[in-house]
Length: 113
Length: 114
Image (tube, rainbow over the protein chains, first blue to last red):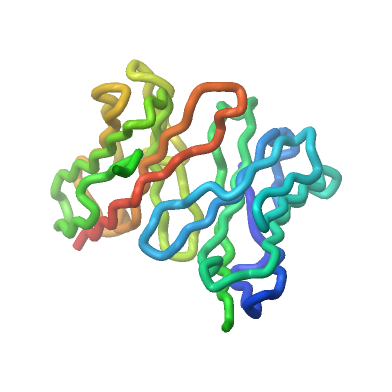
């Protein structure tokens, strides 16, 4: 079936550096994408989203890039902070598939002081 | 107060027992979801409901059932728990507008089946 996956299961980054988390998706009909952050012991928390008619969207210290040609999604975190240490999930939605989110396996980001 | 709450937060039970996990929300959303999360894996959809009279199976519904008692309440049952149902369970809600696919998650229930 269609799925969303991630290239790197663990990313170690120095505090203050920028982080890039990648995600490949296989459903070309996906029309909405979300990045979630999950801290230990908590439920996933929304970070940023993007529609398929966009290729870039910026939030506070985060940017999501969408490349539909190669079906690739990335999350960039600027000036990574210790509080950014968490597992990050990408998720895709296809209204044609019943408007349900499909989640990738997650990438753990470890911020080193 | 949390918008999406789950009870219990932790539960240890034995094989063959019936278990119910409850979810309540104060966001006024029509759509509710149940997911399970296994170590190192993403979330997999068990069941979802788009309104009180609507119940749909997700990708891993076998061994589970749900009840949508009201707009604000969505419970998940394991009729006869088995060890491979040991996991972290999350409830989520979302709105029904066009740009409404963001889901809001509860804090999770950690279930252990011995």
